[in-house]
Image (cartoon, rainbow, N blue to C red):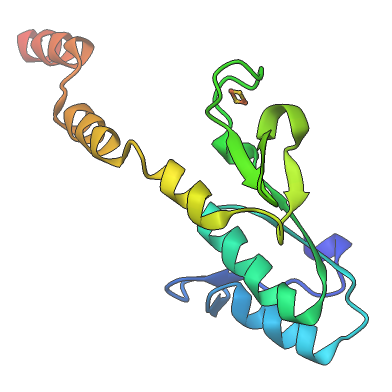
Length: 145
Ligand code: FES
């Protein structure tokens, strides 16, 4: 990225790499210092894209967000990627995946993304507790040797 940009700003939550900050902090600084910025693209977690769009809105800077991470089958059949923009429903895999971040109903999107949180947590716990039969077989084989 550094090779193809004028300036690369890396942010991490804990400061382990780059600057300890949310991405919206340097973004706001850049927008404040550079009125020539005309467009921002945000790709990543929905919550980050939501706040990126909220940061650019007062500056009147066009903001494109990529919602491909919420797609499931990518065929327009499952309905899992439905988003509401400006009051109208659209499918990320058919109508996007890039959208005007200022038009996305972020509250609804984040609500939909958390709909299966309990089941996802249970699934993760089962996966972490699971012991693969291949591992058991390997343990048996190595114990015999
Ligand atoms: S990903 Fe299933 S309808 Fe878009």
